[in-house]
Length: 188
Image (cartoon, rainbow, N blue to C red; front, side, top):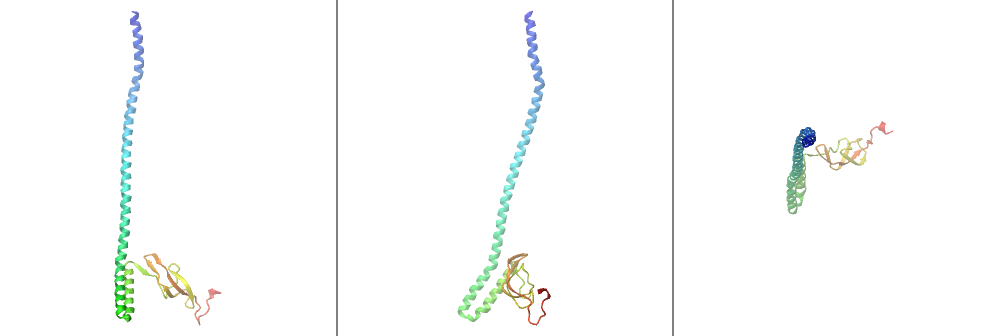
């Protein structure tokens, strides 16, 4: 009988840790399931990130290519507008050898065609003689007697492309000391 008594406590002792471990098993299974869910969410987030990064990289490359195409298209537009001017100059030189006196009207015609080509590209001249001096568009290279702050002479024409200044006009400006005009009260 002792044997049976001994076996019962041993069995009871073996069952006690097993009963204590049983409440841990559902907790471990729950944590493993939660880990699996979190790992799946992480994989999905990584996949989404990689796809988004690839989409952005493709967008960046497409944008760079589009900008390069637009730049080249603009250059081609300018070249196509200016090639007729080169053709006109070649013809003018050909006529100049035969009749030098015809060179001046030909060069004037070439200049008009060139200015028309610039205008077609959106390039407009800066206001010149008679216009008010504007330091945004004019570079004063001298002053003469004449109407104060008016452009009297243009040495080099200036050009604008829309609101952007391509080149300022180099001008002579009136300083207001016209002979016979009353003295300027602001100059004293």
